[in-house]
Length: 350
Image (cartoon, rainbow, N blue to C red):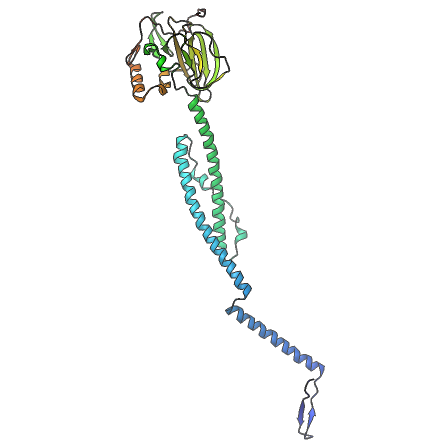
């Protein structure tokens, strides 16, 4: 129960009871509420300025963690950039050099991005600069890694093709070195024809060996010819595929390996004979480069059978001598020739 209030009346010299109307009470309480709200706002502003609320402290801690993580991310991205740069240098200067592939242009490696508004959604924040830099750096690395991945795919294909080329390229003699008869070989080039008694081009090399000696494919490929030919006798031709080589093996004793047979280097394809224009058992061997019929010197295509010194001596002697390679002399009674100009079919030797 509220206390009653009185006011002194000088006229009556007595105390009159004070009565407050509802309107006055409402106005009084309104002032009180307004002042209370005002003071509360002032208090909140002052408190929040000097003291963090629990929620603000939580938000500030989270923001600090985000900034720290972004800065750490940028450092990690810089380290990744260094490692990626090293990988790119190895790719261009080692792997692509070995596989004879052109280096990837610098402008493509850098993988720039266009568009001024690309990161517009990240602007307007306290840490916008950090976020934009991290995002830009991440996207650039992603694109560079994609380019590097494509580069490795290309190099893998080239490595596979290079391995196929190495296996397909002629690299051994058509007969084993130990099977050479008295280590006799007749060289490629112009020579005096022992039958026609005139100078003619010898488009291959002849290897003397006992009849029945195995003849081997000098590189991986596919047999495209296996038949009896004028002058050559029983003949086998191998297409070595992507390397652009063909090899020919003539004067076989009997028909060689069948047409369309896939062969590997060192696989037997026939045996030494003396069919066609030949007086003694041997194999006539030709190498054709960049198309069948484009003869090249076979001496450059059996380096696997000799040491470096032996091969160097062999090449040097072949450039100077008619019938001698080092100490290997061709007996006068052996006719190592082929002549596809002779229009005479001869039966197979039995």
